Image 1 (spheres, rainbow, N blue to C red):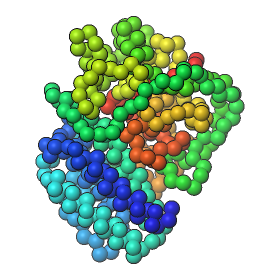
Image 2: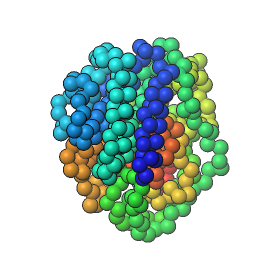
Image 3: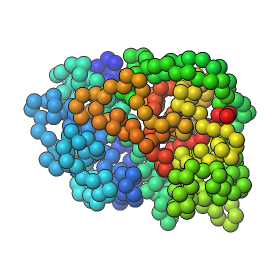
Image 4: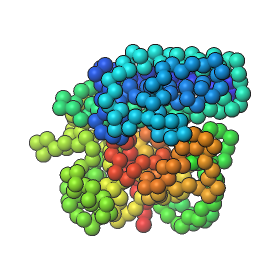
Length: 385
Ligand SMILES: [Fe+2]
């Protein structure tokens, strides 16, 4: 990517993150309702720390850190970058203030631009590109986390956003994939994360994949057919999970006077039957597929079919465990901790969602979450058995 393009993209990314948070009240910025949901203020600071830690500290000889505690406060999980606050304690930080964090953002943004104006090595430009993509991932996480923070309040406050789904109105069809050997993984020179590299061949059986996502109407049929009560449909772990947590519907769903409602960033409103169902865990996606007599596609089938799929509404659970591809290589140093160390006990989701920044996703993109995750913007696409 050309230098001017990178600088422009860097500036846009930084301001977009701040714009996403603008409609929040100051009280919303520091809340952490559970371990997985980080306070918006933390995202603003952590995505800034990433540029400070991996670029300014390494490559700007004259750079003094903005604040000596910020590495400890805003390092997420990089053991190579030193000690850090426990993830569960992010919500305890009422300090630094939001204003201080915004100063931190401006300081680091300006220093990165100044650095690139004086030093245009490929190494620095590549790291800035990783930092941009990292911050874009946090923009999407901000959407998940803001929805969780507001959607778990007694008053269900309205949040000004354009993150709304479209109805899945196309006629239901199945797309055929012919048996054969296919190339999987990223092969072009465009940006990708290291977990997409290690392009390799995969043998696929004849199969058929749905052209649309499962809708709320279909999911209500599953609920009404006592899908949440039939242990035969569930993994043992999934069955324990829904029973321990008293789960009887997707996250944010509430039955009011015999009708399903959900929180939709705006208010509690009646479930729209034509929208794709969202906020299901992998366990629920699997049980639904079982009930339908179908299955979830593997990530390889999904990638092959993707040319013929409309996607971009919700990340789609696949049946694939998140594992390294053949020839996967971890980057040297701290950034080797970015993806590789999470390749256990997680499932791959493919596609992208309404919260994914434009041009951030691609058909080889491997998103991953634990099978119990429900606050992410996830949906269900079926394949025939
Ligand atoms: Fe991060």
